[in-house]
Every structure is written in C-alpha cells, then in structure tokens.
Length: 233
Image 1 (tube, one colour):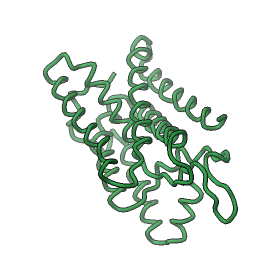
Image 2 (cartoon, one colour):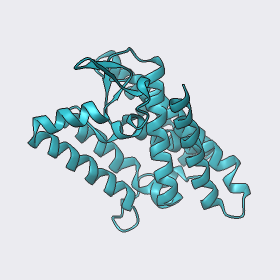
Image 3 (cartoon, helix red, strand yellow):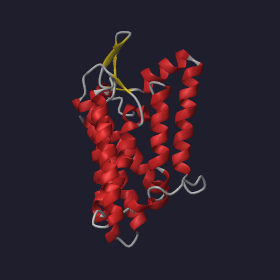
Image 4 (cartoon, one colour):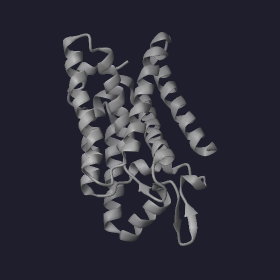
C-alpha cells in the first residue's frame, strides 16, 4: 500500500527512471510528429487506439485484432497542450509513487491503466473515433493515490489528502462537459484499473513475504487480463 501523505515530496531523477523515461519518450514522439506531418499521420494510423475506421478502404483498429493499440495510443498526443498537461500530471503524481512501489510495479500499473482506459473507450465509446493520449494511464496513477488516501482518511493528513484528490477528480470528470474531444470513458477506465490494482496491493501483496514482487505480479496480472479481453472479444 502506498502512503498518501508523501505525495507532495519532490521527484528524484535517480530513483524514478520510469517516470522520466515515459516523459522523454512521449516528448520525442510528439516532436518527431511535429517535424514530419507524414510521420505523425503514420503514427496515428498505425498506433492510434481506434474502435474501427476505414482508411483507404481498409478497416483498422482494435476491432480488427490490432490489440497493441490499447498500449501504444498512450504514447501519442493530439496537440501541444494535450501533451504538456499529461506530462505535468505524470510529473506530479508519478515520481513518489514509483519510489514507493518500485519501478517494475509502477510500470505494470501504468501499462495496465493504459489498457483499462483503452478497453473502456473501445467498449463504450463511439465507433470510428481516434483516441490517443496517456490520460487513461495517468488516471490509473491517480486512482492508486485516491485509494491510498481513502484508506488513510482516518488521520488528519489522510483526510485532507482524500478531500483534495476528490476535488481534483471531480474537476477532471467535469471537464468533458465543457471541453470537446475529451474521452471521459478512458479516464474512468484508467481510474477504476488503478483503484483495483491498489486494492490488490493491499489485500494480496502485504500478506506475502515478498510484497514488492507481489505488487508487481498483481499489476501485470491485471494487465494480462485486460489485454486478453481485448484480444478475445
């Protein structure tokens, strides 16, 4: 289980390699797309998470078995503000969590939440719509913090943190009512996935003699189940 009271501690480049690697990868891919419109188009067509869409007469997307889009879409962004907001979110909520649970476990949480967001978007979103961005994965991180704060709400610090995170959550869930092109389904899917994994960390990992490894196993098990659903259905 993570400690919600430590969420505001400053990030460390040495101890959070996954967070800063993710930021670097996202920025490099975005800059590469800006440098070449053709490359940007190819990246979105080949890796963007779509339910189904005809491109040059061919149906592409998760619906045609291209399951990898559920993960690769988390490394693509539709604009500068989209990228900056998501990377700032990752910078704020990611480092301390990675420090607490370990890089391997953090990676599993991030990828599983990305898959959970894509699955929700795929199952409940409108057809023929491109969906890109790291929001599902980021809401998974937020979900893990939210669960930790909820479990620690009996203390003054935990209660204050839970209330703060609750306000942030409500604001973010309300944004699609005022801003177009926000896939709230992916947000909810990632959030639920993060909460589920944090619950498993508490219920399963803490009872094991090797809790860090069990946390990692729990996160990757959820990832495997979500990807199996996408592949089979």
